Image (cartoon, rainbow, N blue to C red):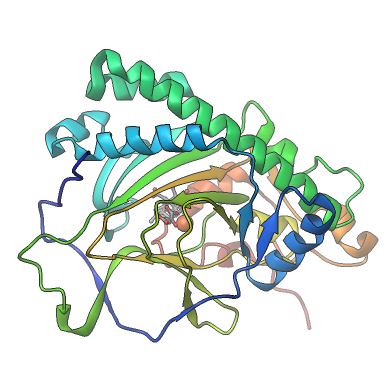
Length: 336
Ligand SMILES: C=C1C[C@]23C[C@@]1(O)CC[C@H]2[C@@]12CC[C@H](O)[C@@](C)(C(=O)O1)[C@H]2[C@@H]3C(=O)O
Ligand SMILES: O=C(O)CCC(=O)C(=O)O
Ligand SMILES: [Fe+2]
């Protein structure tokens, strides 16, 4: 068994404990039933910007191999993990998230969809064994990318868009700016007060993801919460056999606000370590992000957003704090 290492510094942030409810309301989409799935996806993206996927087609073998590689990585000494480089933007990070002062009870590895680049970084950590890590990662990312393609095509069908690959093409493009993240939320060290003054320790602070969609799976440790339209927070029961899909800011714009990017966060569990893996589906940097014409009521509806490319949005997003509303500065002020 691999023992996951404990954090070494005492840097973390907290929030007052809030009443949250386990949510039986997370919509479940069964990819083996495409006819039902396309409508369920649209409804879930409108209501929550979030859903769970079962019968996803990602082989269990690819999942468990990556999970063991990830656990092995996080069990290494801090010194060893830091050889992956600082996350600028790709590499190993510990507690600091982004470059604008956010912190969380988390350590992570941020990787690109360029396997050779990842390999180079991982060779500094693993030596010749990096090859195995790269192959396992390539299999996992390939399978998750295919699942994302299926989901985005069903979504387009559900939205009655004629060209069903209009969304999937953006992330299947060889220039796609998709990224991959492994997050590890360690248990608290023994000397840590579990009562913690009645506050919850933040694992990963509240935010929306900037990309089109993100596909997340984790081990069976709780912590993930989503924010509903009425602004209440609900806990999402973990399910290591399923994937969870988030609507990102770019999809909110592509649908002219019909879908909402979901605000989510992770609270540290404290007792059990949580390991999550997230694939963020991004378009090519030059892609224009604007409402799809067929969703603008055949040209009779105005875009709620100013024109921008993914590069412009991403550059602006990476200068914000996690909890900021990153889309605000791209909203159009429309005359009443
Ligand atoms: C504080 C930040 C971390 C983040 C870049 C940002 O400035 C704002 C967006 C954050 C986020 C959230 C989703 C993904 O985890 C992520 C990799 C992304 O693309 O946007 C992170 C960024 C990060 O951790 O660098
Ligand atoms: O680790 C998780 O479960 C979610 C983390 C997350 O939202 C992110 O990395 O963007
Ligand atoms: Fe996220």
